[in-house]
Length: 340
Image 1 (cartoon, one colour):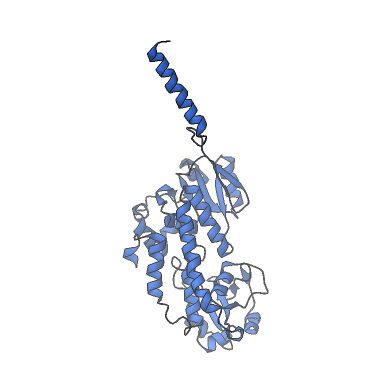
Image 2 (cartoon, rainbow, N blue to C red):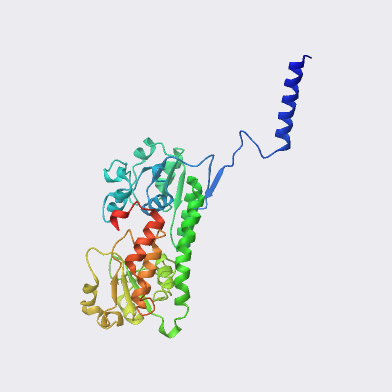
């Protein structure tokens, strides 16, 4: 063996030994990304996804909070309508110019359009079973979502963080939201039981449409230090009778964003005149969808608003305008400066 070949042999032996001594080094290994969706189905990806068709506005909001909106290649059709458009258009020129495809929402999905986009994953409501089957039959992974409680919101954000390679950011904004609510709970815990306000929540579908025990609405009411009058019914969405509401006699009525009616319509309705909330003019409306979205981490803002309505003296120092600016900056950065 020549001296040169001997040196090559020594170097090769040293290199192999170096690799053996440091087993953590691998030039081809990686960990699969595994997440479980709200159906209980496990999805496995070899790397963070880069092409997302998101057909749920609340999940889309989370993706923008995570700062991975460039991975989104299609949005739900309702993003181009209503008050949410101005916020998304401020954050993304593709939405402002309406160049992002919108193949559907919770009512209808164009399977052909979704397939043509060649997504890595589709985010959709778990109740859209036929659409999910059609997509999965075509080999397209589906992350199915169902938000029933605020804990589901946390779960969704963490899962999307893992899915997109932004776990650290997901943990950061979940921690921020929980911490904001924790500060409020310290004041709420001091409210005597006899002073706790009873609340009736009214959906825009009609005065008798409400949410009961197993719902984000119930979480909202409880976190604001109040009691949902509909606790005896488990349903997330229930249709109740006027007689039942009169019997409950709520101290406050909270209306979801309603384009047809406002609090004065309820107050002036003779059917409601015997109810304490109406007699004391304690009927309020959450004014817009984007800021008070109960299916995103922005639910903290709705909690603060309801708490301030219910206990104005206790929460008199909460400035809702300042709270809004702080929340949007933490969750979305400075991309919504023009909308603040």
